[in-house]
Image (cartoon, rainbow, N blue to C red; front, side, top):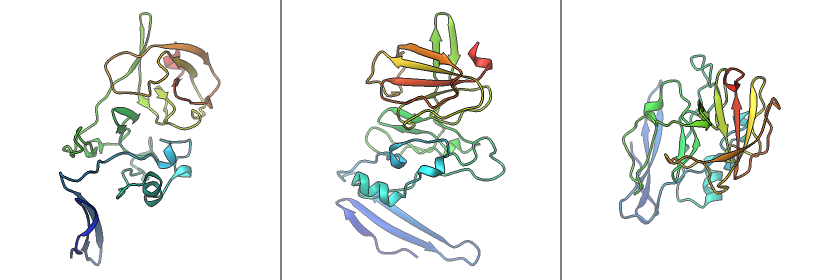
Length: 227
């Protein structure tokens, strides 16, 4: 059964579909945006942060985020892997986050990467497809590939953290911390093939906790990758 569409704004309607079932009853809510509507989809981070050591500690209701950002309608865009088949990223949001050409979080999935939702420059949805990316650190003749951006670091990985992650980088139990000062302090993680230069500030075994601000970078590197 479908409820009569309700108008939220000019060119934006809201409908509810109900599928009764004794075993798996479903209620699906759909927001439809007409091509002529003067609205655009955008990404709103939960409490304006990608993650913290315990991601569930900073959750924000979709309604609260929509009110804070003064949006017309909000859709929960993250799902958590909480079952035994995903031990590496349990309780982490699935998939990557890119907003206005900036990678806020690299994809981190257990096989659902084909479900990544994306929009083109006009705000039109693209077919679900994996979000591919690559990144590396180069100093002299040495290059270190990045395994993730603003995600939990596991054994043998090098992960970049920037100001979108939260107020401070996560703490760890192994490896070293490379703190960088970006030459372009306005750079915030744009997806661009052009290299971004940075000046090393420190390379220590501080075990994380470094304050993250625009213009700074923090790379957690495993012991094997720190050579």
